[in-house]
Length: 255
Image 1 (cartoon, rainbow, N blue to C red):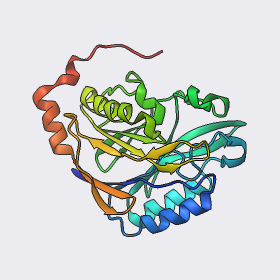
Image 2: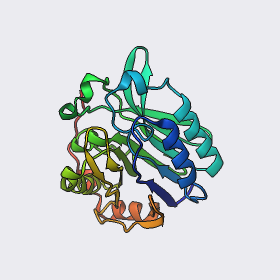
Image 3: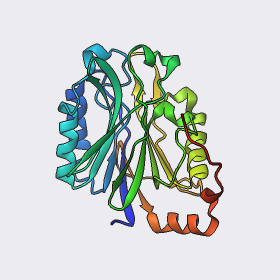
Image 4: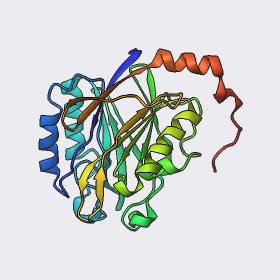
């Protein structure tokens, strides 16, 4: 049980379709990060590439093994998404890796405007994971726009959104993260890349953390490209207990 969770957000310029370079960069960036959870952007080894045939790795492949080694080395959890091929299909797969265990979530809402459905197959399962006494829900980028999919059914304390969210749509990014935090009475963490990709899309980061009230936490910059915050489970639970907004939710099931 860890009531005060230290998190690190890696907000960096992903080198296009170059896993080795990106992992080497992250090796240096995460040296002595001293946190309980490290969160990486969407497709952190390649950028948001639709060239799945050439970039996808097998399940639990090289990038996953790197995540596992970092989790063991830092005695922490590491999460982020990787282009993955399984049974002849491609998935935008979001791994959550701890020193002892791992789970994954396949992105449900594929970004039609960016032709993601032409390259990847959607997942269809909501995935939550427990770690250090906390409950986390995993989502990926475009999923953030769909509140029903992000609905808190008492299965998470923090919503983790890894993303490649372009600068041109920064206001929706901020507003949606805040809205998901307020309506679900949960911390909402959004980690986004910076730089320009091979589709000439510009990214300016703006990784953010909102608490269960919708207040934005001030991030501390431990080093360039690595931001940190601390989450309080006691504060979150007290707020839920006092106001009990989740008790008044509409009752329904997703088909």
